[in-house]
View 1 (cartoon, rainbow, N blue to C red):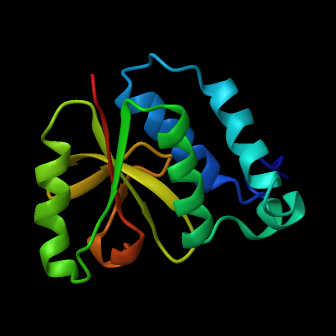
View 2: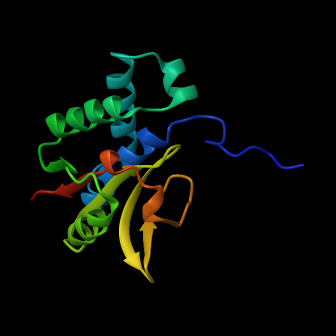
View 3: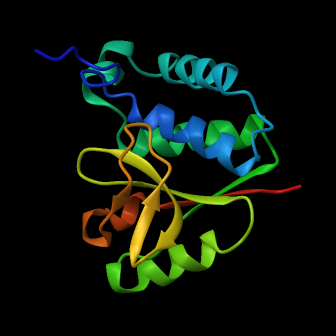
Length: 151
């Protein structure tokens, strides 16, 4: 018998991805707990907490929360990808993560996560569930956001 791990039953990967992205690009300058609380409050002001915990965040809610973050942290730049074809997406991701203090937020059909590196032909993740890499075919192109820190 194995105990459940925190996060196995909830759908908070979207919130964790935003917190981890901001923490990563700010080079650990922003505190995670206050940011987590701020995101939960912003979400609760518009949608129900039960829906977040059981269904996660859709693309429209993600866009709202990312916009909220840029309004309160003006040194965080978030640019949604306009690329719809996977064949062009890889070069855009690689070009972005080559720059300092950058990360790429994306979604698969069931999980939000972050790309921070490309190694051995794999997109390496900074992930709340400890997933190490993702295949480009799993990424939904319309769910990609390029995130950077502006000093």
